[in-house]
Image (cartoon, rainbow, N blue to C red):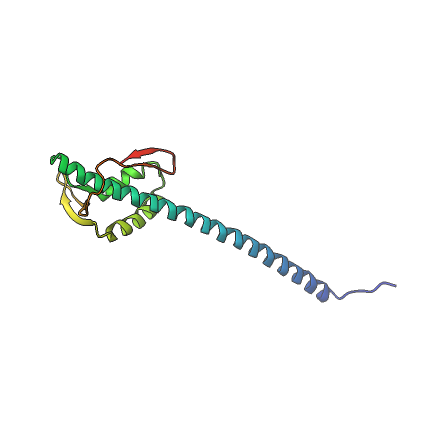
Length: 152
């Protein structure tokens, strides 16, 4: 003797199984995506910290160079410094995102003054100038994340 299960009950059981398995898959994928974003955020935070230290050291060394040889300008253009230190970053969006965070930290530093200056060539650019004490008298070397040595 065969027992027949009504079609509506059979479909309801399959839909419940489908919903449960889909929900589990979505939850696992969501956890992986969240973990990846957090890891990328930690890596980006570390890179921003390195770039801030490099920018401040470069500004400090530029001030020392100006006092050593007054022909050197006492300031650096923010955009030119960005292009110098992020030359290995080819993504325009990533470069802009990183440098925006670096600008926020550097411009918040009380040892840095932000001005508009006319640079050689007639362009007015936003520049940074070191106004704090110079502290050290020799150049500072940094290794970037890409393994390049930069003497600032």
